[in-house]
Amino acid sequence: MSISFHIDFNGQCKDAFEYYAQKIDGKIGTMLQFKDSPASSSVPESRKDEIVHANINIEGVELAGADLDSEQYKKPIGFYVLLSVDSEEKVKSIFSALEVGGEVILAPQRTFWSTCYGILIDRFGVPWKINCGT
Image (cartoon, rainbow, N blue to C red; front, side, top):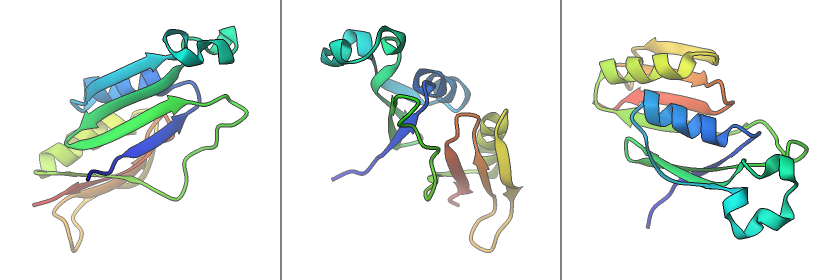
């Protein structure tokens, strides 16, 4: 059994996953655009380049994603992607990459359960909690 997250995007799935791959060493598995899928005929021409399904692996966490029609899209609330890494330096490095254009909720710092922990919402609207697991 495994668990992963599926995140809806407002036309930014491809940009987000490419950013995660470049900045935080994510490995993209699938990046399927509507135009290349059986769903091609069911979306308007303006959405053909958007993503119907994508997945990426980041530090052992699989994220899946897709673009929704802008009228259906709702900003993510009520959850965070919790990424546990093995060093304070890694927390700070990933946090620095994700905070660009985003919103810092809690800058990386020592807590009673972690040597380094930070919370942010990235520029794509995805909420993250990044934790040093050692």
